[in-house]
Image 1 (cartoon, rainbow, N blue to C red):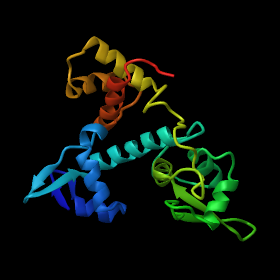
Image 2 (image 1 turned 45 degrees about the vertical axis):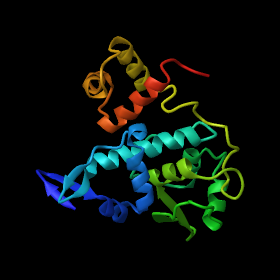
Image 3 (image 1 turned 90 degrees about the vertical axis):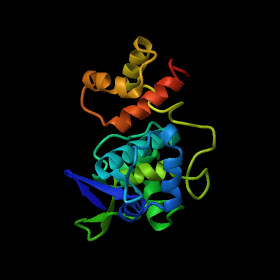
Length: 219
């Protein structure tokens, strides 16, 4: 970990320790940076580091996008990534019909199902589990096919492509149409000024990537 002008820079080892992500996964994320919009690295003493705040914002948005693409039902992927939610909201996030599946997973967790982050004590004396939204997004993004994991058949998607139906994608398409030769670095300030609220540069990179690959509505 390295402090620089008010920023906290994390190495890959720091990210592994802080977020519980394996080094091979972190390496793959970096290798595929042109596709996923991974933030740029800074070299400190010969080791790659990343602005932790920027990296976390990017990773949470990546998980949100992957979860949206992998969810059978209309996903519930809004809200604070760090907010802890109960079984009913967890079911909505995961695209389950009701919370019964979540209750089953608590007793018989499938591969990748996250451990609860905390519990509410109910008047009956029972404990109600709660999970951080971002951990549920990660589960949805990475869960296996139908079976014990309770997933869906391959080939079915909640969204045909990332950010389908998102107002920000429409803004990005229009910006690309009006500025076909512009780079993301040129377009992002323009888009930030048009959006209803601020979004990070990594988020806009992902949206622009989808806009370039899908310049028109499909499906």
